[in-house]
Length: 230
Image (tube, rainbow, N blue to C red; front, side, top):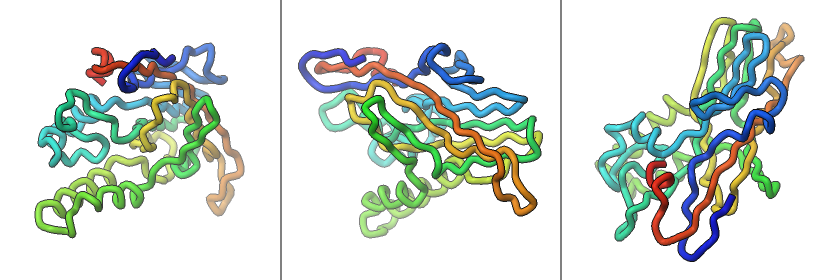
């Protein structure tokens, strides 16, 4: 839904579409996540708000333009503004494998699609690192140190491409570019989830999962409270 009027666009937080609009074996949870639950395999995706990401990295989000939270602008606001724009679109991908000997999700096979059929691939560590190199100011002193701190956090918290063996859980962030303001409905496609392998660890059985989300986009001169708290 887009609320029309004069002024600028202010996107609200992503919310799951109703369970009736999700696929088979999909469960919508109260925390805003959507989970594929089948035979004790649980693969959940949850959209993260900037406020949640800032709380998760509180000490790296409270230094204005020098904040080193790699997923948001921290507590910085543009001069003369009261609203912090969204730096990236971030989802938490969480896998609980109590069903198969091993499971594997390649994050490069994940895709975000808008209702208007535009497609977005996740940003890689290298792409986000290159994005931040512009802030390093010729690798000078503290600027370089802040970039390295961001890189360390990205390595620790982005979803890693690894085997998840029986009885294990694994989670990490999937990072996309910020969505244009006209995107109010989207799906996240987790493609080629490998659940069975041959002797050479090559997938012989895969599943494709689709998660549906939506948001409101407001237009005006100041963001509504629901957006300010995003």
